[in-house]
Image (cartoon, rainbow, N blue to C red; front, side, top):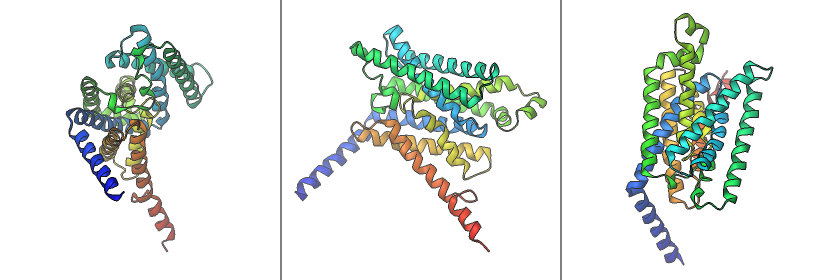
Length: 303
C-alpha cells in the first residue's frame, strides 16, 4: 500500500510538472499575472477614495451583460462577451450616479440596490439560457466563479493587452489620479481636469473588472481589485510604494491561484486566487510594522 501510494504521488507530481511546462498554461499564467498586477494598481485608488464597494457593484453588474451579449449574438468569443460586460457595468455606474444625484438615497444604498438587481437579472438570464439546451452556452457559468483552464491563447492576448493599457494609463496620469484620490477640491484649484480624471479612474476599474471576470469570476473579481491595496496599505504611507506592493500582492495571488486551480480538478480559479490573497492580507494585518496587530499590541504593552 505504501509503494502504491508513493507511486501515485509521484505520478501526480509528474502530471503537475507536465501541466506547468505546457505553453497554454504558461500563457494563462502570464495573463493572470498581468491581471493581478493591474488589479492591485487600479484598486489602490478605489481604496484611497473610500470607494471599495464600487468594484463589487460593477463586477456583479457585468454578469447580465455577458449573458445578454451571448443571447443576442450566439457568439461566445471573449471580444463579444467583454463588450456586453462593459456596457452592463457602464449602465450600472450611470444608474448609481443619477440615483445619488437625483434622490435622497445615499451612495451605499444605491450601490447595494443596483448591484443586487443586476446580479439577480444575470442569474435569471443564465438559468433561462441553460433551460434552452443550447450547446453553445457551455462555459458561460464559469463567469460566476472563474476558471483559468477554459481560457484560450487569444483571450490571454486580450487580457494582457488590456492590463498593460491600465498600467500605462496609470503611469501617464499618475499626478491627476493621485490628486483626486486625496483632495478633489485642491485638484480643481490646480486646474486639473477633475471630470476627465474621474471618468478615467472609473474606466480603469471597469476595464479591470471585465478582463478579470473570466479568470476570477463576477463574484470575486472585486476582491482581487480591493484586497491587494488593503494589504499594501498596512506596510506603507507612500502612494507609489503602495501601488507597487498592491500590484505584487495581486500578481502573486493570481499566479498561485491559477497554478492551484490548474493542477486540482474542478477547483474554480476565483476562489483559489482569493484564498491565497486573503492569506497575504491576513499576514499584512498581523505583521506589518506600525499598523499590524502585533505592532499595536507591542506599543500598548510598552512602558
